[in-house]
Image (cartoon, rainbow, N blue to C red; front, side):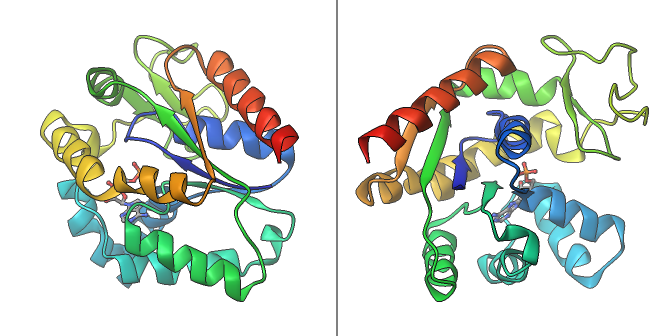
Length: 219
Ligand code: AMP
């Protein structure tokens, strides 16, 4: 299974990507998580990425494509992958096509999680993340059992720098300008599946599973 998850920041790509990964036994790759790990390690790539990320802009396409070309060549990708947050621009989508073609592979589907802008803002500004295992919580809709502590690994939860209101607005504008055009791009290649991203994690997961199953039966 080779899937791209598309959707605005806060649409649930990370959470649904992890569920799909567990269900299908393929890795979920988040470019945001890879870049944050590079920053935490103090790596040169992370230092370059940080200035873009903290302001809510996209990291340059050549940097992200370089990271992803390496990641996609790792042996754990053999049975497939779930991509969360990549591609995020037309040049990245074209780059991904080139990389996959070179490997003799193709995408199975692109799942777009649809949510209204107002809901995305509410979700992002009430989001808390585990810095150790990347589990995401929401202060209102899915709080941890003990306030401020990750249910899965016990680490203290943090609010991401780029989930502050001003940066959230900028990230949404960047999404509309740079990433939303991918909806038409993937629709034209017949890969697009649009799923309503509103509701509980389980409800959205069920909708994704049903849509992918319907698509599999049609093709
Ligand atoms: P995310 O964790 O997916 O919300 O990504 C956080 C930030 O990482 C984004 O706001 C961008 O600054 C950067 N980033 C993640 N993925 C990409 C990508 N595919 N292209 C460019 N920048 C990215």
